[in-house]
Image (cartoon, rainbow, N blue to C red; front, top):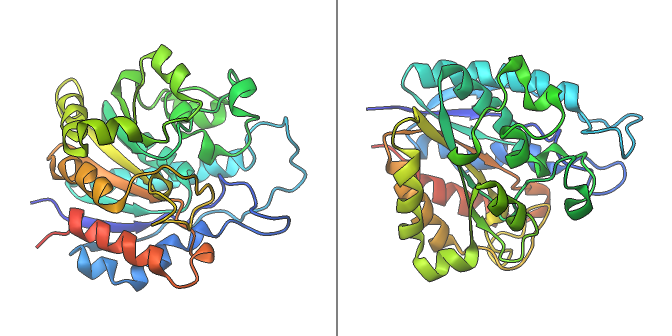
Length: 301
């Protein structure tokens, strides 16, 4: 039986400052979930911390590409090394962020090992890249460019680390839970990147949507798949402690029903959890929700 291993990846390098001179608080995500006893509740092994570089925009200006790009690339290599060792050894990494740029470390690790897909659970398309700035706005924050970057769109120092880009093929991404009005959906559909929004999940049922995603993700030619969970996939009525708490998200039971079949697949290689910000959660209820969700879906006896 595979063993859960808990790894902290507390990087906030991919997010813009929430206010001048303030660093994004999502780097506290891992600590907040560990305070909920997540290591014990998942029956997990201790995987340690991959310490990120310091946050600081320096003299970066709009138009300079992604800020922190060299630091994110170097961090991704270090995180990939940690994740790769555990996946190769048969463990199931539960990687606690941080922002969504930590996914680069996971997909780099998997790309070294073979061909893997990604189930990307997020309230947004995260498809900003230099070719669509008229729709999505300027590039800069890697956390809002995740699907674009893992499929090879964006600056090469992030999308082609070690010459291995794209880390994931377009047809091997399943984007689940975006808001119904998300502007990226038109381009994603044109490119053949599967994207299922909240309205469709509710019409068809989360279990059915998960089964359809699994029909591709757990079968050859893929060697397996990874789950990326951004807390903003949840509606702000239940999870307001994120940088973009847009209305119209999934509710907790819907997310659990979507996650459970994915997590149960023997072809699932691990999960990254991102964007929850304890600084925006004074009573800690968001940490309780996420810890309960992860225990309910990923705990081992």
